[in-house]
Image (tube, rainbow, N blue to C red; front, side):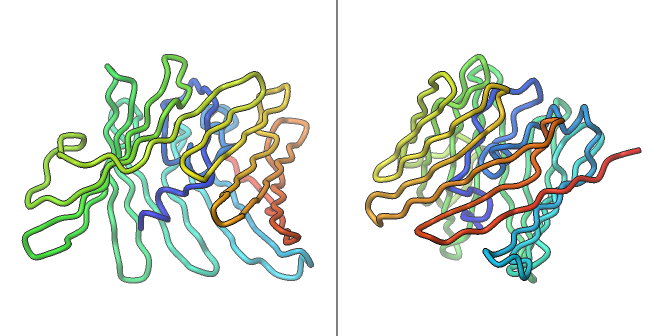
Length: 249
């Protein structure tokens, strides 16, 4: 569940006029929710094909309400799953519910306006009387730029409110914002985000020095600034993801 809801290799770090959404920022670095609202986008389909373009390897459909909020993410091929999202009265993400097969998991979110930070909480039972708790803190600047991600974990007999559990810090990822580029590192993992003159994500590179893994994503846009294709490469392997849109009338 954690690996589905907290994808480790993609982060959206752009400032946005729309309410922040750490799930979108982690999973879809190119997606601007303010533009989704302005362009009246209803769904976005991402179809990934292999190097020979012979068959679809993965097909994900993102559904939005008319306020531009992501309300459902559904993987329709391969490992099939669906995530549904709920928001508070201010438009901030408060819950993500993941279903796969007969299983169901929930991640709860809380936005602290005073500290300009999100905290997500995922719990699972480890004994009849105990729980394993994972909380992730997303810390932003006043300009809504992501500065840090801190992950805490631990066990407890009783679950307290989000951010109120006594957990141990397990990792900290810091982000440096330069002109046209954002870089981050945590342990052996480093990331680089490069943006074009219009502020669109142009490329994303991920490196794990320990396992000698390196991969790069390239993003292509149409004349209206909408993403139309993502190209991926890793050690000679490649694939392409084609992006199509459906709009509200």
